[in-house]
Length: 111
Length: 113
Image 1 (tube, rainbow over the protein chains, first blue to last red):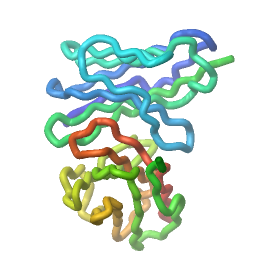
Image 2: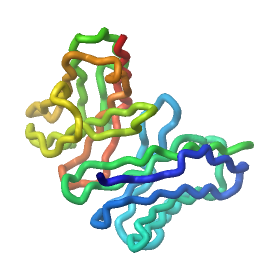
Image 3: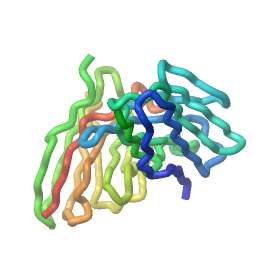
Image 4: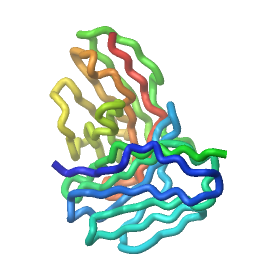
């Protein structure tokens, strides 16, 4: 059973701080990794995707991938109360192409 | 460009009934995937359609079925509804079956009484 694991949280950070969200996956053959943000009562919204080892930056967001450790992370710099949401890590199944999601980490940014 | 649309947005059904949900993809997107989201199980993959053919299927019973039309619109059907089928049903579309960026619709909230 291919799995994606995330800490459920809640993770609470003060406004302006760096929020660090982590994810591990079991399928060593996975090639594509995604972070989605989901506000309460809304559908998931794609934030970033990453394929290669290392960092990928987009504005205040940085995705980090370490395939040897089977680890993906998302850093949110200068966190804002509007970043308060559940963050879902997803991994593309290498065989079937479906997305396998973690349970999500709830982030709360306190003003 | 219009986003993914799903209809209806809310549904209330009773056990034993069946339900059909609809998803219209972003213009030009030909792949449609369906997911079920519940508080206990999270987001789980149901199936994916591309060019009117089912490409992938998750671990759901045969009561869950789907199809895709020539205009890429997709429907999913759940027969003999059970209480545990209460969930948010999300469809997600992408340009091609091999494309990675996938965008979700607003979802259909199904409540089974």
